Every structure is written in C-alpha cells, then in structure tokens.
Length: 495
Ligand code: NAD
Image 1 (cartoon, protein in one colour):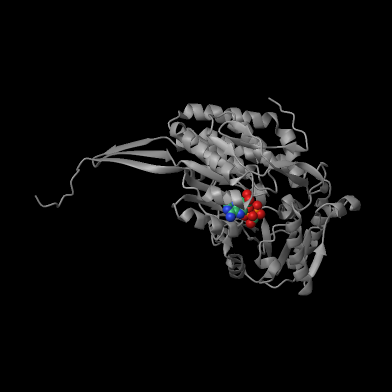
Image 2 (spheres, protein in one colour):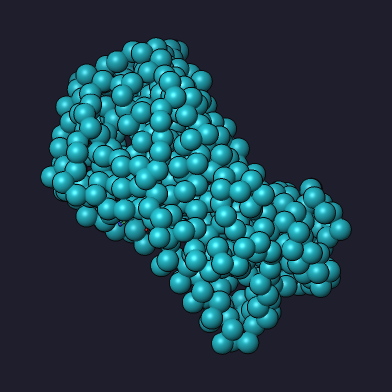
C-alpha cells in the first residue's frame, strides 16, 4: 500500500508494536539546502532505549520458536511495503542525505536485494542438519542469538539497516535498531513499516547518538551487536560488549586502494567512466570506494590526462533532485570541513590540487554543503590525504614502480575493507590475491563491484565478521551441536 510521504516528515520511535511520541524532536537539515528541514527525528531517552530492549527480550521468548514459513511471509509483506513506496522513499532519502536521486534509487534497490536474498535462502541456511555414520549422530542447529542491537551510519543508511533486519529476524532473533542522526528519517520509517508486519516487540527502533548507542551496546539483555560505522566507534563498541561477552559484527572504516596496472587501457572510455564515477559515487562517502589510487609509472601521465577528461564529462555537481546530477553535497558540515582540512594540508605541502567537474548553478552550490570533487597529484605516500580515510569528494593519485611496490603500498594501512585492481584480467586477479582486504574488485569499484551473494567485510581494523551471502546470514545464529555418539565412554577409562 502506498503511503503519503511528505517532507518535512516527523518520525518517532516504534517500541513493542506502538509508535512512541517523543518528548522532543531534532531537525534533520537538507544538506543541499541547509535552511530547509527534511524532517524531525525523536530525541529518544536512555529509558526509551531500555524499554525497547526489554520489549525485544520479552518478544524473543516466543519469536525464537516461530515457524520459518511465518517469518518469511511476514518479511515478504515488509518487502512489498517498501516496494510500494520505493520512489517516495528514494526522494526522502535523497533529501535527508544529499545523495543524488539516481543514487538514492540505487540504495533502495540494494536494500531490497539483500532482504530478498535472505528470504530466498533462510530455509536452506538456517535449517537443522542431521548427520549419522558409524561414529554416531549429530544434530546441527542454528539457534537464534537473542536481542540484537543494530546501529547504522549515515552514508548508506537504509541498505546498511535492512541488511541487518532481514537475516536477524529470519533467524529468529529480535532487534532494536538505531540509525544515525545524520540520516534518520528513511531508516526509521522503513523499520516501522517492516516492524508492523511482525509480532509486538520483534523489531523496534529508537533514535539518538552515542548516548543511545552506549545503552544498546552495554545493556545486559543484548546478546549481539551488528554495527556499521567508523573504526573509532567500533573500538568503543568492542569495549562496551566485553563485560557481557556479546557477539559482535563490526563493519568499520576503509581506506581502499585502487591499483592500475601497466596493462590497464587508459583509452578505454567506459572503464575510465567507471573509475571516475566510483571515486565520487555518493560524493565519495562510501566505505567501499577507492580512496587511494596507485597508477603504474609507465601509464601515469596518460592516466591523469584521461581521468581529468572523464571527470569533466561525468561529474555534474548540484541539485540532488535533478536526474542529471551525479555528485551532491557532503552529508554534513563537520564532514565537509574535515575533507577541506585534508585538502588544505595537501595545499600547504605543495601538492598539485585539481578541482574537477561542472557546477550548473553556482548560487545553489554556494548555499549547500558542496565542494568540487578534488584530485590531489604528487602527494607523498604518507600524506594525510593518502593515509587517512577522507570519506568525501577528494582522492589522491600516486605512482608505483612495479607490482610488488603496488602491493606493498596497498597493504600499508591498518585498514583493509575493499580494494580494486584494474588491468588485464588474469594479471589483476594475481595481484588481487595478494591484497589484505575483505573484498577485492577487478576492473570495477564501489557498489558496482558488490555481489550480495558473497561475504562482505573487513580485515585488520576494518572490522570483524561478515555481512551478505550465506556467511553474513550465519552471523545471526549460534551453531548448536547435539551429539549422540555410538561409544559414549572414553576408551581408556580404567574399570
Ligand atoms: P560513526 O561511527 O560516527 O557512527 C555510526 C553510528 O554509531 C551512528 O548511528 C552513531 O550514532 C553511533 N554511535 C556513535 N558513537 C557510539 C557509541 N559510543 N556507541 C554506540 N554507537 C555509537 O560513523 P558515521 O560517521 O556514521 O559513518 C562513517 C564511517 O562508517 C566511515 O568510517 C565509513 O568507512 C564507515 N562505514 C563502514 C561500512 C562497512 O561496511 N565497513 C559501511 C559504511 C560506512
């Protein structure tokens, strides 16, 4: 059923099957037009967070025994509601986030994709297996873990929430969701829409920042934390989880390298378009995006020339509501200032800074949290723009000497989320195998390189655990082995 989604939209907490009107709301500005309010999110109290956890804990007692058929039917109804409102939800997401409309529609598609994958595979992945041979019998169960706290970031807010909701509930867990205050509206609305299809307390949502996050990650009744966000927040969460040894999945920051081998064809316009678009998709505010570009020295000059040409052609910066816009504003002022600080640091170090792309409406641009996509050339390998996760529309392009050098540079980071290798396919695969990352894409990058049928996640300080694929679904269950061995005594026990 299509809802009437109008902005400014006021959302509220949904706890134990009921909308809970908050005492106080905070505005969420439209980053393309900061004097316009996209909507109002509830400033929930720690007491309300506790209430949500209590209701999820109570609901778990019966939901864990529910039939898989029932879980699937309910999730399908939730998915259908999202589909019925897909266009309006994309518009809302674009307005509160700043991402261009094509990008917001893409996020809706990805959000639905994994929910549907989870529905299609839940029966198979979570089924009880019985094995019997001459040594005995084993019943392998996949038991739900309990109350899951799900915490999502602002950059890809909806997809990073629905990818948690679907497997968690299908596995028989209950959940309390908390979105980021920088993009709270669409997630809150969608979570409520899905939650209405489930028994009271199975899916709840509260809003707030670290105060609510701390309650959700330290409360005794929470058994699992599914978190996506920055590495520093991940550290706090791991500590908060330690006291009661909670199960954690942490999808954290990335500083993803992209390697362009000597056999990469710089004249391949389609590939160069992919490079540029993937660098500045969602204004560069994506965890799985090339943030350090390493180009073989033999093709470097030509690469830069072709890259600039493609950037001029494909980067159209401006009003996110327009179909032709490819780059919107930065999501918030603090992030804009941080990226500008990295550019300023590059300027002070004398690096070659190039602003790229086209702005159609300067006045509009100057009013919002916009900046020109910026390419930094000639930076040192340890420059801030290279070593730190910029998470915005800026990228450094650097040279490397040979394959070993490229691998060494790519792996020279505490982070290891995704990466990409571009060039002749067999050569690129060979290099891909040497990179320390959870995902490596060949001849593509960013969301285009995501295959939700396979696990996604980070190594080193980019995280623990996986999302997507069968492995991602298994993060929401505890395996439970019931062993009935034929020989029940140890063979050498003295009589
Ligand atoms: P963030 O860590 O600041 O916030 C993420 C969420 O954590 C928000 O909902 C926030 O309110 C909450 N939070 C803040 N402090 C908390 C605390 N002490 N305890 C519990 N919750 C707390 O991240 P962000 O700025 O929203 O997102 C950007 C970061 O997320 C980037 O580093 C990016 O790389 C990362 N990210 C990673 C992935 C991935 O899949 N690995 C995906 C998207 C974004």
